[in-house]
Amino acid sequence: MLSILAVTAPIFALIALGYLAVRFALFPADGIKSLIAFVNNFATPCLLFYSIGTSDFRAAFNIAIIGPFYLGAFVCFVLGIILARKVFGNRPGEAVSVGFAGTFTNTVLVGLPVMARAYGEGALPVTLSIIGLHGAILLTLGMVTMELTRRDGQPLAKTLLLAGKRVFSNPLIWGITAGIVASLVNLQLPEPALAFFQMMGQAVVPAALFGIGGALNEFKLSENWKQALVASLIKLILHPFIAYALMIWVLHVPMDIARYGILLSAMPAGVNIYVFATYYDRGVSVATNTILIGTVLSALTISGWLFVLSL
Image (cartoon, rainbow, N blue to C red; front, top):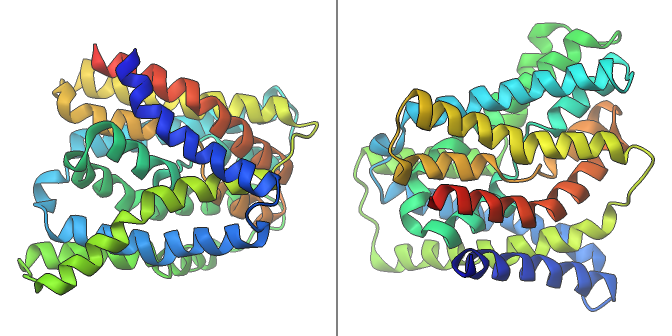
């Protein structure tokens, strides 16, 4: 247990530091958006390019890990929609937003730092192979489902075009694509270039954790906290349980590899669920509450999954 605390304590201490710094005006609240933009648009793409480009990405692309991760995400999405409709009585659009809140993982701001801290750089190739598909699969799934269910929905072709634009305009995708190309052609960069990408990549962990902590000040509990709690539990417990069951019990993936996909699926929901909700103006309060509740609860649930995966 002490070894698990040694992994998680620095991570959530950085998140707490970011929260308290903004809460007590020691760091400007407006600066958090810029910090997160730096992480998402510059530091993480450099990390993705370097890590993928200097590894055997083809060996890391393991369908026995990627498949269960996304199958679990799909089940959570459907279950979230059903619960939002049948239990909480939401309209179709709001229900899709709740389902998306229980599906979309914070793979970058929380996932990458936790994976690197828990399992070291050896976890990054498999982790990045999942991240490379994350936005493309889940954002398209969410947008298409939203347009098909709401009364004022757009035609399917237009929705797919918009989803494609949002995916391919993402700097994370640029970093992933460039890294894959570099890996395939065995690109050898000069030492100064390697040092540049290494230094940028090293900025991801502290900046991401401090940024997500500071961003929590924007999210306040509202009357929809019960729905957010359900979405958070689906994301933090059900998703990794499905991934665990499929990888370990069905596909018999070795634990020393399966744990990468299982732990990544145990990360809380990302800020993109808020972007999704505000874009469609559906379930915004549930999305904000899910980010807040899920991030706080993940301090316990991530520790619990680290314990399970160490058995």
